[in-house]
Length: 314
Image 1 (cartoon, rainbow, N blue to C red):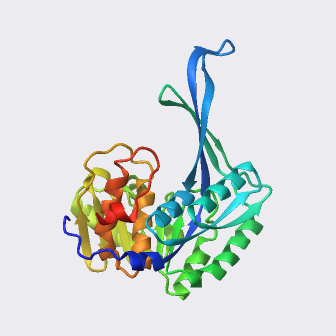
Image 2: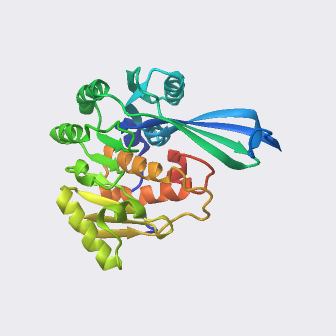
Image 3: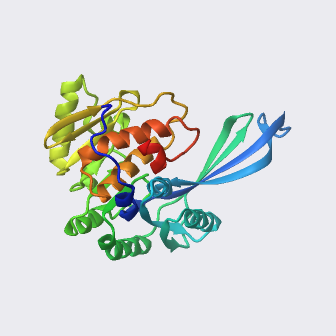
């Protein structure tokens, strides 16, 4: 879809309030020189020359929202460790409002990547599951925050931070707020009642099985949408673009990327753009081509990236 039906209003976007809830992560990169093999084992020795920390998980989704110009709150549970305090500083610096429940027994999810000779040599993950008391804090804080926002994103990375998602979906519906979910895993029953879910092809096939053709896909997508009581299901299809399934039928938009460098975080950009525009008063169908354009822009950038209002509107 080349025609973008409605112009973007920066004024409306700047007034939009989006609440992002989910699993935050610290993406840590260690870059170094590889000059020799270790005498202790047949592995390279990396002499670290540069360190970099980036927002990951739902924090990256929030960053994508704020990059477009919206007002964003980020609600999550973290540990009381170095990674959580670093993450909070990074979040603060972007203008996102952090609401972090701290659990001293929790390891803040951190993905440490060691890069040598322009390639990733190893990734080390630090994580565990948050406890009941911390999740109860999150639900209570959600109850306090939801009325102040026009849309909510649940960003599920399967780290346990959204164990009480059904309760929060019901609260959002009570306030008549659109709920957008980036799903994870094969049990989508926990997303019942959401406004929009945004699986990719692999994620959807884990739930409904492989489809034979477009007709079979339509049938499976609409059946799942009806079963879960969703307003819409948005399937992101990489080079095939995106397909929206709602009560009116289907809309397909072709991929817009001129050149693909990196698909990392493209799903974050898509759901963030949808949520920001819905918070600004656009319908899902009106927001769809803009979300598609944003996804096309971000895959043309290296690493986890975001899109500005100026880039999107140009």
